[in-house]
Image (cartoon, rainbow, N blue to C red; front, side, top):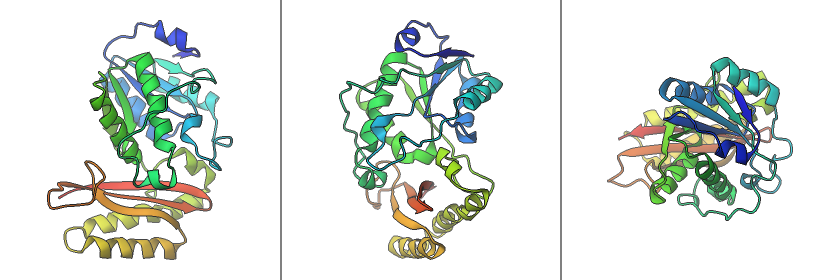
Length: 269
């Protein structure tokens, strides 16, 4: 695997087409690795990037303490057969025009109002510099991948945005680098989040949405989670569910022991 540490160098490489990009902030887990594996199986070459993007962290968030495991990350990528690792310069996020995304004024965007601006701004730079045939994302960050898909389509960028299934811990907690802040017992306990939204999903067609949301919130609060949000929305555009909705997103964000955890399920109607 070739490690690239400058924008100029990565611009100069002629990648074998079609090639895929897997953008990450490092501290790689099985969720990230599932994206890399998919890329290896379906594209000629795979580039993984590691960049802890300051633009997507709000005030009092964990930018300075975000887990960094670069040596371990390199070993994992090499063991999979990743072709390239791109680690941009520290100033990679400087002097950029901030992009205003669609679909960012709900769900995570309410408590993290500048988060998706930062994500989209840096992803746009990656796509402009590298010009991958495909860019791979996990569905744990459902709102993020929806925002990026809309932007790429609107701007007619010639990159396919591929969304791949959530990878989970043994007891159901969605894989995340922030899970490293939790003990094994905590992770097991936090499997309750997935159990809760799975139960909600199973009752979608028989119980009113407001009753389901209320019951789910009560369950999570009584279990000891602080709820940021729990919503049931149209999975196509995050709007309110209507008679025309064919696919529903059940999404939640909770805080447990100061760690913010997100999860979701998509249900076809």
